[in-house]
Amino acid sequence: MNGQTGMWAVFVREWKRIAASKIVIWGFIVAPLLSMLVLMWIMHAGLPTKIPIAVVDNDDSKTSRSLIRQLDAFPKTDIKFKSLSFDEARDKMENMEIYAILTIPRDFAKDATTGKQPKLVYYTNNAFLVSGSLLFQDLKTISTLASASVGLQTMQAKGYRESQIMPVIQPISVEAHPLNNPWLNYSIYLNNIILPAILQLVILLFTVSSIGSEIKSASGRDLMQLGNGSIFNVLLGKMLPYTILATMIALCFMSVLYGYYNFPLNGGFWTMFINYFLLIIATQGFGLMLMGWLRNYRFSLSIASLIGMITFSLIGMSFPVLAMDAPLQMLSNLVPMRHFMLIYIDQGLNGIPIQYSINQYVALLCFALVGMLFSGFVKKELERNVYEP
Image (tube, rainbow, N blue to C red):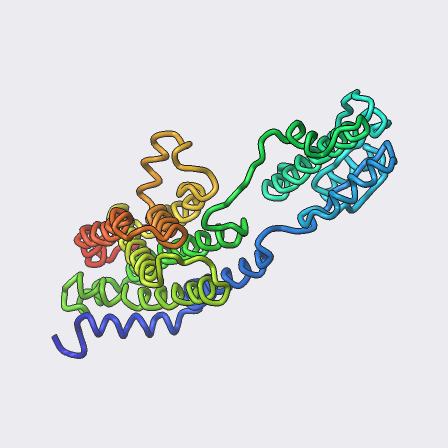
């Protein structure tokens, strides 16, 4: 091998292709970094706050007004409209001006103190899952507090002491300790998964594209000659620049997530860095497997984009894998991000001994090795040098 051919020559050639390609610069480098900035800005508060709602107060008593003030004090709730009719409130919900409605019935205070059990009725818009769920939580809490407050006042009027009343109103006291994310910060949970999932999607697409574009431009045979006829020289030379760039992007993610925002990283820097690096080469291996197996650039690119998108649903980030059908549970393990997420949970959040995550580390490594098994098919496609639209 000399300086004009071999792995190094392919490596240098690929850097020149990257530098000359606006698609690679914007798609591979700018898009993940811009996604990070946008997502971190959107979720900088951790949880959505001041979500607008409407209150239909048909009682307008001291008790109902006190209840409204308590609800408005919750950080996630913003009472945007008060004393509307129910029809007006419903119109505003349909126009997406508000995300929930609380209705207080007429004679609420009077009925509550006479034991007639009035009903607080609330409606939440669960078409918006996060806002609907958070408002449901606040409205349920205020309903429980209202019931306890009325019970306390009624029993105090009958002459009971507070020490006698509380065991009746709240017979079981709950003490909650959320583990690993005690702030209930959505950004800690979501951005630590969404950002590497975006990185996986980008790597998968550009791995397929870096090989397929050679076939499309009829330069496959020239590339093989440049690599001295060795597919390993070609693949290493072509993949290594993207590996370096993706590793730098991963380090940027880690710096922002665990350095600037100080998100939990109980397992230490190296456990997550190795996790990111293995995700990168595993995804590249997955892309090579698609290209070698399907042997069609456009079809491989379509399947890569499909897999990259359904990854968000398949890995168990929003819906638990154990609750999926058995075929989907098996399919989730065939996506590199699933193993990345399990390592993040065990090492980043739980900080358990690393030996408990060995299976996931090995699984990511296997994706890279399996991809190399398809290198012979990739070589045939490059030598055949025929683009099939």
